[in-house]
Length: 202
Image: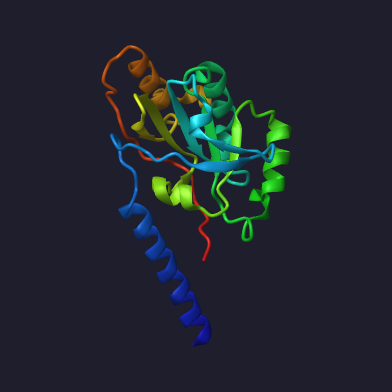
């Protein structure tokens, strides 16, 4: 009986956290608040540090999730192709107590192994992920600078095939950036993020 009550309580806690995240989530067109998180070089990083960029590719991701791993090379490619104007800001929000592979030390190891050319930030409190309403790893938010504002232009997946990059036929983030660079409206502003659920703290 105690075990059943415990499981029910944990399930209720998860539902409450999920509801709070979704109800307060950023949407396309919203202006985001800047944040400051620790990078794998132990330095604090904020969006305001990227003074010369036109915007940002903010990606909530992690070490252990097979979907996140499947997209690692594509996230690296996004940085290499668009990083000058739209740098990748990778953020790991997972609870490392439950998932030790996602600890800060293992983030450092993973970044070194894969030679990440972008910042990889630790959202230890999970406050940034909650603010954005991120639910998956990976979950992308394409943001453009508009004067002093940082405005969300696209939310969702990187492309339409997590299993095989070569088999992808729709390139959501790349197409959205191309539209922004051409001064055109983004035709597809939101897609469903495909990945592991973010591992929230209890």
